[in-house]
Length: 123
Image 1 (tube, rainbow, N blue to C red):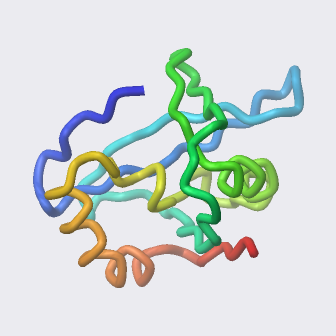
Image 2 (cartoon, one colour):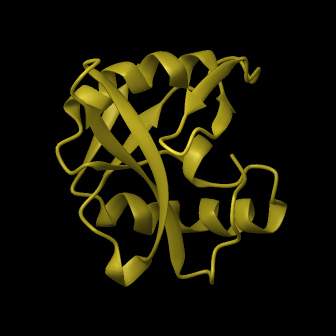
């Protein structure tokens, strides 16, 4: 998976959770929205744990993003509880390799969590 630059500081990415009926699993897409145009979403609070990204998150377009074990485990459960169809998860929705984006998004996290329909917590 390759992150596309956010259009402005007033944009965010959301992980779309798509049920894949045949397998009973979920498929995912990353979408970008203006903060004032974002659909209802749930933000996720969880423990990052070990920084090693040894697990694959597969997207519906066949791209793959490396994620941590704790997020891999959390996603399998959180996807079942996602009622809006969209999740905001810092490890995924922020391009962690882009320092400028990461710094701005971290500063905006309070606003992002306030805008969320609810916060899903995974410990």
